[in-house]
Image (cartoon, rainbow, N blue to C red; front, side, top):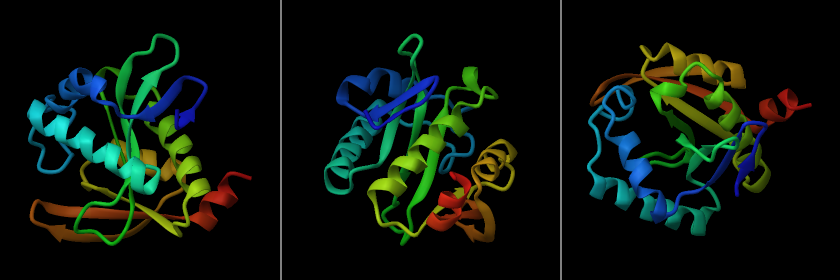
Length: 173
C-alpha cells in the first residue's frame, strides 16, 4: 500500500492488474490527452507494469494503481514518474471516464504528492498537460501547481506546471 485516503487506496501495480489496466489503456476517450492519444495493446500494458515494478525497486515510487475502498474497484492510475528523455519528475494520473468529476484525481494526487515528497529529495514536481485539457489543468491548480511555461513537442503544445516541495509543505500546514 502506498497511499490510503478517505475513499481510495493506491498501491503498486502487479501483473495481476493486467486485465483491468489493459481495459483502461484501450479506451481512446480516456487516453485522448495521454501521449499521442493512441490506445495501448495488452502487451504494451504488460511491459508498462514490468517497468513500474523496476521503478518501485529503484526509486520507491512510480505509476500506481488506484482503487475505491468501498468496493475494491480499479478506477485508474496515479504516480510521479520520470520519462526517459526528461530531467524532471512529473505527476501523472488517468481515470476511467465513469468516475470523472468526482474528485478522485485530486484525492489520489494529494496522497501521492504527500508520499513522494516525504520519501524523496525532489525539490520540484511538474505536470505536463495539453493546454486543451482543462479538467486536468483544474486538478493541478487545486493541488497548488503554478503555470511555468508552454513548449512545443512533436505532438503540439505542452503546458508545464510546477509544484515545489516548499509550496507543497506550506499548503499542507
